[in-house]
Length: 129
Length: 360
Image (cartoon, rainbow over all chains, first blue to last red; front, side):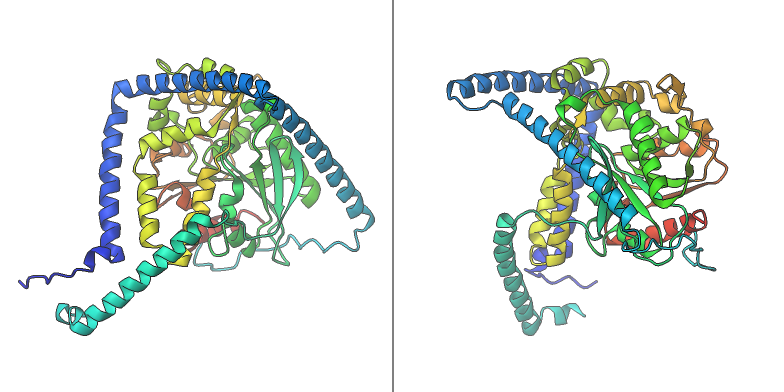
């Protein structure tokens, strides 16, 4: 058996590096898989989500007060504005679609022709499942 | 090449040159990567043909002079953007299907507004999908479509077909579609009904932010993101790899929020009660029975899917009333079914082969 010579660049070659990273990735993910199998994981996740929401709400309330004191619009006010903008955007979209539908009717001859819907599968297609 | 040749002075010099060249490119391109604007996505021209709040129906412009009679509607999962089906030339499922003569529509989702927090499963399967079918019928003159969906988009398509006994649906083409939610192990653990206060989460938040769902993914596969970055660094010299990475990274980062009521019903009825699989799911007072689905089904499952396992997707084979069922178990993971060059070579030609003869 011939002994493999030392190659200082081998570690940086794509294949070797990829192999190393993949091994590490699998090990960490496997470990995580075992952790999530644990009964307590669900309990912890439930708590975590709850804490996250409570913290988010508390932070949002604090921010709201701070912004009001600074005479700046709060998130709720920006959200309300955003909703109005969304409604305007929707209206514009509906108008656009209506105008386009009208334009299609009146200028049907100018529109690019719709392709014929008569295509048949190629006979003897090797890709047939 | 032998090992002696590999380590000859010329070979070593060549390796040194190559590694230095790559290191320089990594650094230069790494800087570009950090300062670059977000990666453009989308290969094919499309047009918005219908919009109703969060629901947006696009039609991709047909590229063939002669197309199949039956249009194809792909339903995106409500938590993800539909451009995953059309990432870039050479990696786009839509580009492939258009080139093979299909008329492709995509039901995509805008982030729901606060006043849409009340939208539930029924709005998706009994309002948005039927409205899209009506729009497609008006545009194409065809009264039936091949209804397709990816992940939860597939589940919504399946529930719609079950509710309407396949009326208006010629075929079902489903990608990584969960049906038996007892096998959605990660989400089962994460939403364990003994510990997860569903009503409090929904009532407090209204709209469920993407971070809530992303947190669960990261806990299941904590190394994936870091490993992805490590692969990226090694391949930073490779423009094609970087472009591809940035497109997928953008898609993953742009996970959408979902309406609270939809989230509540998804967890309660699908995850906890497994109601679709058990035949107890009711939408608007009607039962959504898998056994009512009699149209041809193509069920495409990823072999190494850590989100939707084979067991979660496979019951479509036995639970539906379909007598023309085909299943493809494809190598790769959850996303590799609908995007990337590997699917273009290995998977999509089989889908075309199956769908073509059922689209005339």
